[in-house]
Amino acid sequence: MCKPEWRRARVQAQRLADLARLRRVRDRIDREYAQPLNVEALAHEVNMSAGHLSRQFRAAYGESPYAYLMTRRIERAAALLRRGDLSVTEVCFEVGCASLGTFTTRFT
Image 1 (tube, helix red, strand yellow):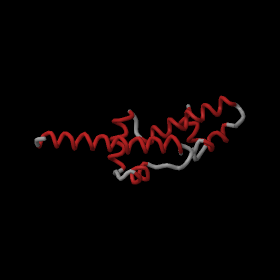
Image 2: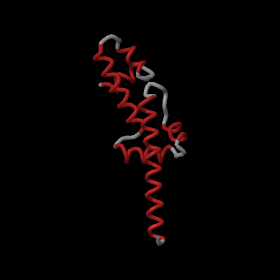
Image 3: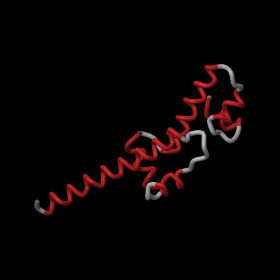
């Protein structure tokens, strides 16, 4: 293998490693959407800076980690509200929103 091929192989290996780390972040958000999560902690878990994680996550999934988290929360809230056995306030806290005001702003 000549040097340009080594470089391409290293770049490809790094991309695959980054995708695996992004998948771990996405899976954690999917599992723990109701918990307080922040980009810095998620980035630290996968040995990336918060800025790098945000850029790579957006490139891979089309939205920032925070936007992805809020999308998961809103989807879950919609399902709980359709079920009809919880009040709006209960749903708000069930999906991890800290205040009813923030929840209604995000939900509408």
